[in-house]
Image 1: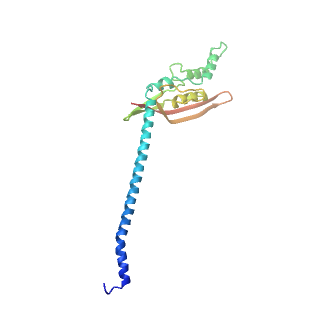
Image 2: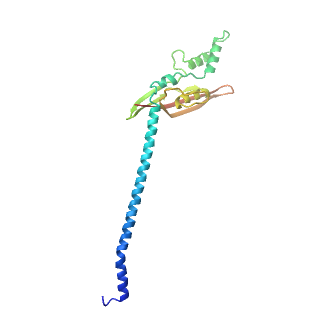
Image 3: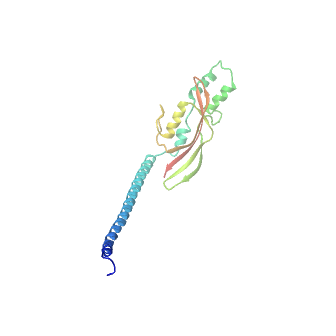
Length: 210
């Protein structure tokens, strides 16, 4: 020590004296970083819990809303719809007129619209797929067996019954199960000043809560 200059001794002494302070500062910064990470984790957990609680509340509300759903809703509310009523009425008047000359085209078109002679006609007819069961609900794919011809008013009626919302003058029906449109195709078939006809094809998923 006697050979070390006094100024170096002072510097070494100061550095040695600062070591505990440096250790305390380092430890404080490390613990503060850990605390910040912990706070962030707690905030994340609280956010996830809030999201989960909100989701559960929404799921519960949906289940309660559809708990009275009619299993045969599609059969009763969709497959019983009739379309192009004005054209049907006109063709019936023409065919009932005594001066009407028998025309196979009129008869064939009328049979198609009314489902006469045992044909399915221009009605919604769905084919049920395999039922997929889950813990709280089950889903069934409902595929339209053949396209139907409709006008704008008919489309509003169909969508009102599927979506459960008012569409123009069409109102939704009660006891509707949860329905999702998975495939929707609408093609213009005939357009003129008095008549607009579209060809509709669609596929649904029916979800029923257990």
